[in-house]
Image 1 (cartoon, helix red, strand yellow):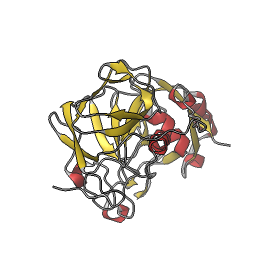
Image 2 (spheres, helix red, strand yellow):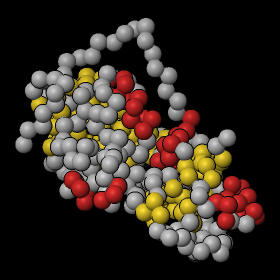
Image 3 (cartoon, rainbow, N blue to C red):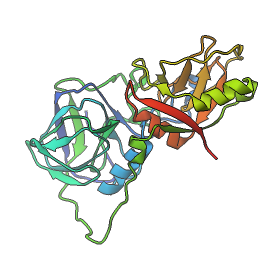
Image 4 (spheres, rainbow, N blue to C red):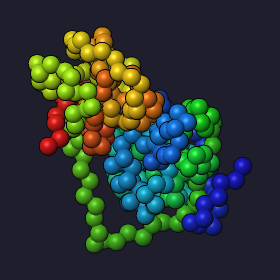
Length: 295
């Protein structure tokens, strides 16, 4: 199968997945306009890290990257290209030599990209010059099994990209990268449509309580170990979106993330800002967060 890209006539290159890591998927901004068919938007969890990596390589804003969760893969490049790794610091290495985050590197045929110990964050991003070249389905390259048939990286899988020469660097240019959110407990949010139905004491409790991220969390939703007593009744099936925070009758808060469903029947008590989604996407199970109102 050929993957054409109108931006360049460079020949296609391949990455061989030597080890797939824990959970790695190709993602872009996601697919829009298909929610009426029940298709999630999907797409990148941490849009800030995504944008920074593509910017550093001179890519288009929506060029597809590899989203890497916690334990990184081992990847062998068969032809030359340029890459940038950002987001969580999972100690990326080229040929066993540690490299810096948010920095462009040229890789050559036979080079191996691997990852080591986690230092901060939960999801790292591998951007490649001109983006990963997999088929666009419903306007997006983002992997979502029900749509694309791809679930996550598999051993010996081939990933396609366009070969490229070394990127010329401007010594007078610099990009400031804010990494504070990788370590901050605070998750920025607005009040949701049903927030006002909660008693005042419960409203206060939601913002005073600290919540520990549950091991049941994934790209669809983040859950917590703590619960909140409430007597809210369910609502008629209503639209939900990434960042919607549902409160179940049993007291569980469920924060919907990029691969979430399009409708739901639980009260929507909070709505995370984009910055809040970005921050929560970088929290691993066992870490503690606290909701804060966006002013």
